[in-house]
Length: 139
Image 1: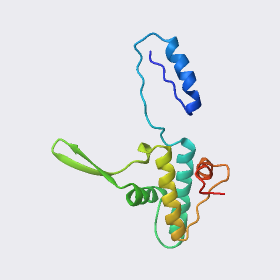
Image 2: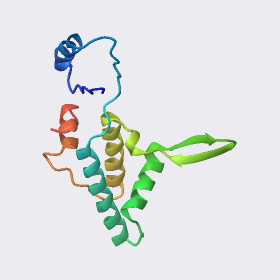
Image 3: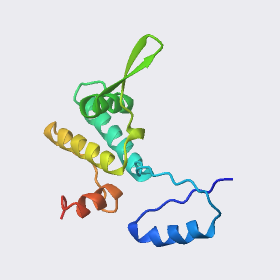
Image 4: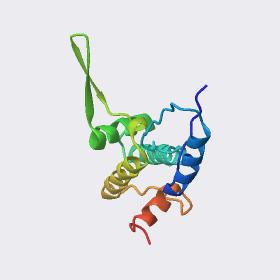
């Protein structure tokens, strides 16, 4: 049975080397990007709920799912997939975003919302705020 070892920081490379040396060869190493996190996703859906309430109160019927589709259309775009001889165009999924892409996407949404008078919650202890501080975007 295959084990999965996930690294979260460069400092863990030594642990990986130790583990590799402990095993019989051959081994398979798979390098993937860090996908969006559950805390990012939770805050994102909280934002969509706030957006739905804000715009509905102003006369635009909007559900959080509608807001999700609208933001994906506006900031992520579409992808085309060919099935047989049929081309299918669909909105890009947020599940495909890595942590950095999700942060960028959320920042675009936040800026768009501010331009439309909708202020989104950004809890100080949220991962989003932590990433923004690390990037020097928030004091």
